[in-house]
Length: 322
Image 1 (spheres, helix red, strand yellow):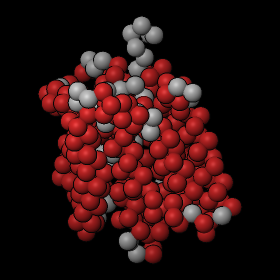
Image 2 (image 1 turned 45 degrees about the horizontal axis):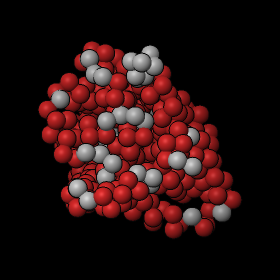
Image 3 (image 1 turned 120 degrees about the vertical axis):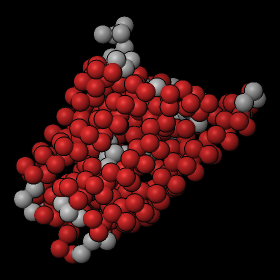
């Protein structure tokens, strides 16, 4: 099997991994604790492998591309917060559920959307370049969003701490290691072959990540079945609106297809793994916020598997394909 074949059928690989994870977590809930402990290291290795496949020396050009940065900022920090507030108001009657929906939908992903962008035919250097900008804006704007929508300013300090820890561990460290690897391999055929071999890793590593999430979080979700129908509608609507907004913003800012794909994955993915520890630290009366965040991550997993097929083929096809 070639690497191209693996990436062609990656959607089936992820769907199979999600299915097996859900089955394992349901049948053997007491045996999946180790997977939860391995999740963050797996994400770190996944991003390192992804970063080694991206020409990091071209990041400066991505930062200078004001069209893409403008579209990503407007989409993530102006339009989608309004969408999140509307969905929370429509589908969440309980304050705890509303808090969970808003926490997870207000904060765009800064880590694995890079891998999805790479595997979905986007220029991953734009995703990498946008991550620090996204983090900075999250730290600044999230207090305002919480005050405006919920008056939950006491949560701000904890959220900021979790964001900074995630950024340092999942972005800065793998990025530094990938940069060192790129310099080490430059101009040496044997070393460049090592980097090429790393290109096989993103698909199986991402499959392990989604398997682990599905297996470890299915128990939390199944305990709140009456709530899931509303949450499914809310999060499915969010994914659909995010994709359509990406298409609209890409047309307005005249982005090429490869950048439009990155924009779609940026708008569609959220920082559920960062806000989950925050939700777990809340009083027992807020346990439904945990359910909302966990369920969003499961819906997003399936949504991203669909995005990997839909975004490059239908939403942002190449000019020749179109």
